[in-house]
Length: 266
Image (cartoon, rainbow, N blue to C red; front, side, top):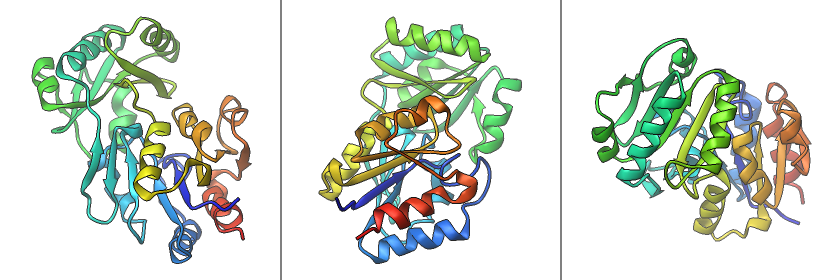
């Protein structure tokens, strides 16, 4: 079967956390576009935080951002699609989150907002190119348009909170851990699998002709929905078990290997 679209997670997949994408991977991405294929990114980052990765793509592609909440044209930066919480649901999610975690971050159309700074958010904000501002009013943030709520705390507490959010949600939402100490709350129906399907539809490509690759639990929806779902060798075993193919780790240019041996195969 010929594949036409590859969607790759960023952190831990395209490159190690905080590292630059290797020249080898950049070269194979360019080769894919020259041969009429499309490579896109599927990341939890929102538009402002994904800018440096957008420039990696030499041609137009619908970027899957915010874990599927936003599709953005990689060439123009134009928002093609977005899904936000309804304001009452955003308020309920934030009120629930602040009671379950030690800290909380909220991404809105206006940027990144932080409630109760501390050790739990230091690493996240260090990686983000967008400095957080104080979250002074939950209702004001809800009115801005909320993409996602990040609840931070002890990994055991976050696992328990995720189970509660999925079984007794405070509002229509989806919940998953993007890191052991980070629980993400997004609008119901938002995940990378839905984002992959929306991107493929925009390009007129059936899901059977798509490849998805990632290293985290938030990547599973697209790994399971793609024509060929792949996990990185550095992914947790539980993620690898649900993938059809395991590719080399991000430190060994696994995405470049996947482009060369699957996306561009005859």
